[in-house]
Amino acid sequence: MKKTIVIILALVSHCIANAQQAETIESITANSHEPEWYAAQAEAWQKRVDENPQDQWAWRNLFRATCYHDQFTGGWGENQDESKTADVIRKMEAALPDSYVLNLCKGRFCLTTDEAAKRGDNILRAIELMPEDICPEDLEYLAVRLWINDPENPRVKELYTRSYQNRYFPARIMHFNHNMLQCMQPNALYFSNGDLDTEPMKMLQEALGERTDVIIINVSFLHATPFMNAIYKRLNIKPLSLNVQDYGDKYGEEWLQHYEADIIMYLINESRRPAYFSPTNPKVSILDKDSIYNEGLVLKYSPKPYNNFDVAMHNVKEVYNLEYLAEPDLVYDSWETSAKLDMNHVTLLANLVGKFRKKGDEAQAKRLYHILSKCVERCAPLQSDSYSQEYPLEDRKAYYKNLLKEQLQ
Image 1 (cartoon, rainbow, N blue to C red):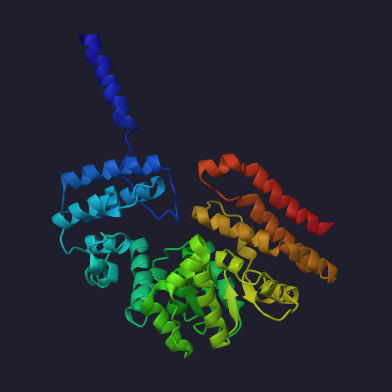
Image 2 (image 1 turned 180 degrees about the vertical axis):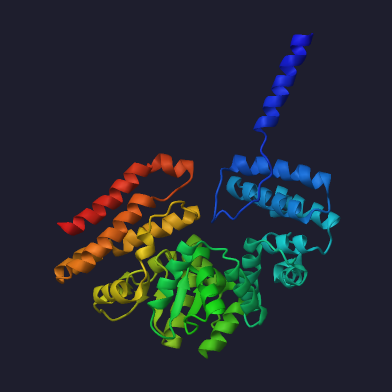
């Protein structure tokens, strides 16, 4: 009997030792995990909520863990109101009605019957209720949602300035956005794609006053009526009216990319402003590829051919700060996605090593080669396990090394 008890206690101890401790659930942009990790975290945070139903921080992390697990496993299904994420929202609403955390979470996920949340009313309420020690990630989220829903609200500048001061984004990502921002022509339109090529740039504009003449337009904002009305007003052009049904009838499942591409071209043509795209923007593929030119770290739209390599080389020599890519970091205190952005420099700038050599500028060729080589050596991108199995780390590093070596031949 004593032996059986010992075995049971050993098994219990093993289970406790292997149970996950509750951890802050970060954005998947900063730190992504496998679905099983989010499921275990949801269990850990549920225990914290059960212990103290008034703990807003516990509810926040329970929601995030559940939401990411549903997102990665298709848990929302055809009816998101039946998902585990929806259950968390309902329980939170019962425990903490009209709380900061409830309004914050409804900004990311709301029931289809919640018309106020779908309008974005909860964002303004969350800002009213936000604590002084607000999590930097949540502050950045509220800043972008206010920018989308009420772009002329004076608190947009306040929130972005606070977010910049909190140093939410790693320095490497801020450097990347600074370089992109500085190389565009005056009064340009800049069409971005995701968080990493939108939010840091907006922070630089609002907090530091950098290049406020550039109009940042994330392609996902094209469907936000308040945001687009503010864009039309600033550009002094008539609002564009398109029939979504027409695009569905004409293009089927590909209607969205054509719909967005037409809005983009309307803004470019009517405003007659220089237009740039982030290098990761998929909407470029639907435009006329012969009119897209690489100018270094941004892609420029131009219906007329020109020597974009001279512009790119000028940017490398006179505009960009690239030395940080070769700095010998003792601790790589950055996000997983920062490494991916570092490697984008190699893809976008490697051919300029050969261009500099042909121009007889060996000093710049060596400088750029050194910077990009250090980037490959230290900053090979991290990915999920499934990606690493399909594209092994050493194979990816070898590809980038060969890309650089080709420029020396």
